[in-house]
Image (cartoon, rainbow, N blue to C red; front, top):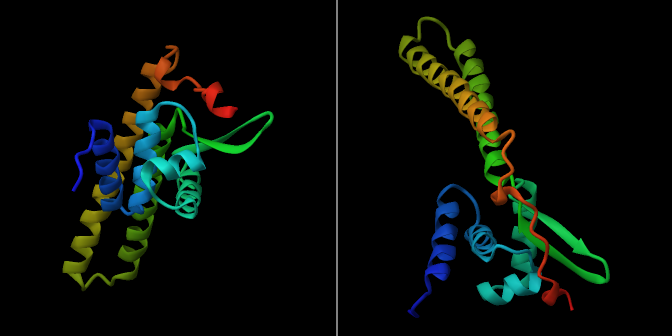
Length: 170
């Protein structure tokens, strides 16, 4: 096993982490690479750095675009598509998590309505799950609102748009 730089280790660890939460490992590696690179990269660059096929990069960048973590960029005179982490990627991801919890709450409500009153153990389990999910949705909405309020009027370099490296477009 070869020695990895700190950035390479981060990219690999990010891939493992996202794999643990249901994404393909390569999607996590791509996102990790774009995070530490700091500027947009095109498919060939990503493929070369990660030592994976262009097809795999293409498939997984489409996935990351679909979950609103990265976005595509183009430049006049350059036929390549560039990929960059969305400035609001993690805020959007949190909003998606809130939506998932709210959907789960509705589904658990449906389950609770389907279980007859005499099946008390099942009803108790479902009632607890519904209560938990409703509480978490309300708390996460509050967290989200507080975050937005804290960042509403502050220009923040972390959220600025990062143009592709002009040297790379030649």
